Each structure stands twice: as C-alpha cells, then as structure tokens.
Amino acid sequence: MSRPLYVIEHWALAEPDAGRRHLIARGHDVRVIEPWRGEVLPDLTGEEAGVMVMGGPQMVTDLADHPYLSDECRLIEQAMEKSVPLVGVCLGSQLVAHVLGAAVGPLTDGSQCFGYYPTRSTGDGSGLLPERLVTLNGNAEHWSLPEGARLLAMGESEAAPRQAFSYGETTIGLQFHPEVTRPILDQWQRDYGHVIGLPGTQPRAEQDEGFGRHDPALKAWYGRFLDTWFGPPAA
Image (cartoon, rainbow, N blue to C red; front, side, top):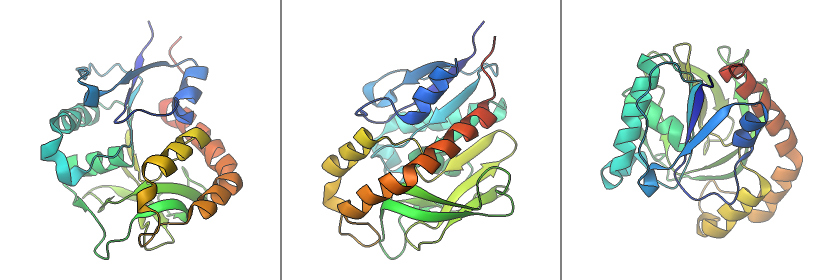
C-alpha cells in the first residue's frame, strides 16, 4: 500500500514545482491539498511518507485573516507528534516556527527578500547542506530560531538572515525557495514585481542572472535533500 506524501499549497502556481515533480518521478504518492481553495486537510495516522507545507503570499502575522492557516498549524503539530517527516518552505517554515513558539515577523529595518542570496551552513547543518549555496529568497517575514531547534544555515545578507532549522529528527524549515522553476520565477516577477526596488530586493536583471548561474546547483541539492529526508517510496 502506498504511503501518501501531502504537499500543502497556498496559491495557484504557474506549474508544478521542481520538488513535487522530483518526488513524483521517484514514485512517491504525492497528494496536493489547497486549503486556501477550501480543500480539507487530512488527519494524520503516522504512517504517511511525509508532509510539505509550501510558500505563499500569506503572512503568519495575518493568521487571523486566513483561518485555514490555523488548520495547517494543527496539521504541523500532528506531524511532529507522530514523527511524520515534515518540511516547511518559506511560509511553511514560518508556520512551523510559529507552532514551536518562535517569533515571526518582518525585519526591524523593513528589508525584504527577492532574489538570490549566499547562504552558509552552520556546524549543525554541515551534513545536510553544502558549506555555501546561493539560494532564492522571496519573503517579507522571517522566523527567530525556535527554542530547542538547531540552526542549520545562515544567510550572508542582512536581508536574508536565518535560512534553515531542524527540530527533532523529522522536522525541518527552509526559509529559501529551492523548488522554484523558471516559469514560477516569471510568475513571481509579474505578480510581485511591485516589491522590486524595496530595501534588500534585487533588480529583475540580477534575479535572471542569478537563476541562470545558481539554479542548477540549487536544484541538484534539493533533489538529494528530498531523497534523504523522505527516503524511497513504499514498495
């Protein structure tokens, strides 16, 4: 019997992202759920292959405006209680941090991220992330490190400070976006181009150059990470 791997999405993507396609190609039973469209989240049994909570335009500081995000927080709690492998990406990582009691919000100087930023692994992250990786970020809010969590990666830019953490053996949060394909980046630039020019963001030409230069290494790492974190699909 296949074990579902749930992917929670928060907006209409231009196409399935690279991580979802990778997991499907590996044979995982990927099931996409979109609570923002009214779709109902599952009750976890503990036998699932994993849960991924992805990014989106919503903010943790606007939790009251998006009641389905509170439902996602309960799903995150279930995943951690039942030791289901859990990955939070950007908004997803912020929701995980929020569930763990950490502060989530904008940087004090008002900086935002939109572009490619150098990231370095910490000692705790050295087995999971390369020493240096240039990562795509697109966010206005960040998490502080939850109590009991391990900081895995730091950004070299003040606009992109903490980049990855783990909690226990089955939960990880990634502030950056390794899943974004070229069509999805085009969608970002079209739909959120109004933030380009704000402190911390990069011009579109720099983002385009960054995708061409850094995306192959980012995708190669992401595929290895997903294979490690979720393991092979059930036979």
